[in-house]
Image: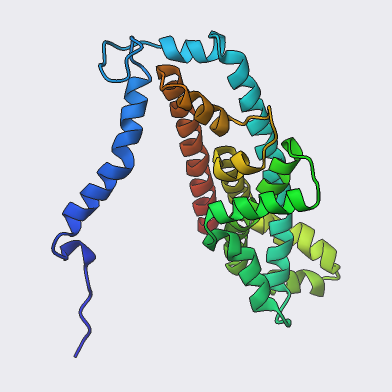
Length: 269
């Protein structure tokens, strides 16, 4: 008997459940985006369209605090993503092109562990580690924590890209008297570039948006954009917070979209 294909879309209640999940996920984001253009200071009643709160973010009374927090966030995200992507590229090369070696499965498990461990556990463990070695908390502790946390996010697209590249290219280069280093830098690395770019962008956005780990390991007086937003919300929700959140959301969507299309273009090539 020929097997029948199972179409999940025809499963009873699938459409209703899908709509419910989409509403729960995206309606709050839509509400925040809409009320960031509210002409009044109300977060309940929409009284007309205005760019007032976006202007307030850059020239208002809290603009200096948010600008410093944004600078810290982008500085940490750029450095963390760069280092994490470099380590992830080397790890993917060893795991995928290194052949079988003792501890390979364990190594992959260690790389993937931050994806499976709850982020709050990672944050507490990182805080305890820094305290145990008497490492003063500040920008450096956030940076180190973000590098460690971002490595698996950068590793996955890089490793996936490398697994889709046959090793015959490197073998052909070595048959033409290229060294292993030349085969890697001139053949494998350019072919891996879409995966590396996707991994970098993903690591960058993970670092930029992180709140839990950052809130635990940051020092006094050091703020990133997510922690600055959280601190402002504790004093009361204002439309300028919604404007910042909307801009951060929009930037994250753009980065993730670029990562997706870069990855798809690389797969197509």
